[in-house]
Amino acid sequence: MKTKSIYQYLLLSILIMFPTLTMAKNLTLLHSDNLKNYELLDVYLHGNLAFIPAGLGGLNIVSISNPAKPVVLSSYRAVNCDWGRVYAWVAAGDHAYGTGRECGVQIIDVSDLSNPVLVKEYTDTEENNVRYEHAEISGTTLYLARHQAGVEFVDISKPASPRKLRVIPSENAWATLVSDSLLFIADGAAGIKVVDLNYLPNPRIIASLKTSGAAKDLSLSGTSLFVAVGAAGVDMIDVSYPAKPILVDNYNTSGYASRVSSNELRVAVSDWDDVEILDFTSNKLELVGHKNTGGRVMALAMRDDIIYSAEWENLSVFQFQSSPAPDADFSAKKIEFPRIDHTASDTLGITLWNNGSSTLDISSFSSDNADFIISMGDNSIASGDSTQVQIIYQPWGPASSWVGTLTIESNDPDEPVVGIRLSGNQPYGPMVGDPAPQFELEALNRVGNLGTEDFLGEPVLIAFFTSW
Image 1 (cartoon, rainbow, N blue to C red):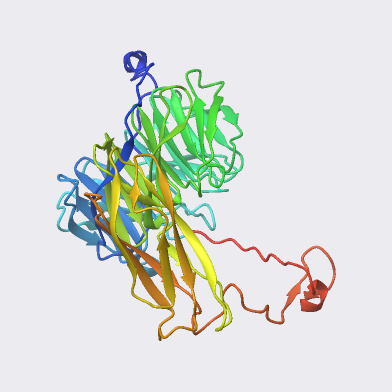
Image 2: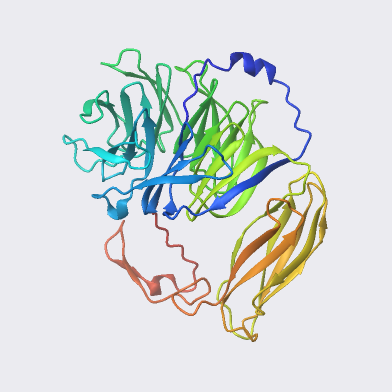
């Protein structure tokens, strides 16, 4: 994320103490398309470029000179990394630095944007099993978050010959952010750490603060530090006195906040199912923008009022603005029914909001699969109001497919046609509603095994964790 000085906006903060938020707020869709690299994981902005890595296909370097028309300039695949995958990038001058967890750090020369060239593959040879997460550059120093292995400082004054300087301890460092002579660390369940960099041979941890959830990402505007804290949403922390950070507010987003990116007025949040925009000018986090994109919002970056959103399959570009037009927004763009008997039926619903400033008129709605029957509460939705869309699933109908699309057409100018993906009784594999299979698991906290018979008649939750 772009680093902002904590002293930079003192005058501006005086001018915006009493904002007026009287008009409805809208996220206007400027662009959405795949970049022909799949499973988009991150967005890093560098001048008129966006560095967008993917789980499959590696890095795309994208021109954003015209935000409404991103253009892929070139791609880079890390040859020695699985699927060419590097999870996150930062850049300075003619070089970019990609962190690939166990795959180490890729340093590439991007002076010729049409042909990025590998300069060096770097890893700490003194430490085993290092997982490099998000990084930050300040001057000629690269700050590498390494989860439980601390935060590593690397001299990159000569990019072809990076040199390890030191490591400071961490509990589970996910991201770093540098401002002036301060280093902020998103340290997982330990919260945040603040490091004094005034004397680099011996940087000192001068403060730590528990956050509302596990700290995953950081963004700084003036003296306000914003922290993505996963299932607990976003924390706003006052760092005007860095040695004594103060939690000002928390906003519990609707999903899982993985990334944050702020400007002088607002903070954008990648929240898994949606993009959320929070205003903080009243020293309180308030939701002023929302868009369920229909994709998996993995990461985002905001510059001025433009938001670049990496959504697994697509890159979407939004503009935050007061809109005189209607704006359709949905609580979900994918509906999955649990398995039901072929003679039964089930009903699920979604909410359709009008986040614009004028009336939203639905001109048509239809399903392309007769097993999914649609009903709409209101076809005309006033600004700020909502209606319910009901989907009835009857798998005993004439359709031969278990999937379908609900298509809704309206007078929303940037999304006049929206498709909602529908699915029901899939013909293969287990799904919600199926009888539990016989199983036996090793007991972790006592001798012996656990099997189906131990839980007859009881609800069972089997939890596992995975992440990108």
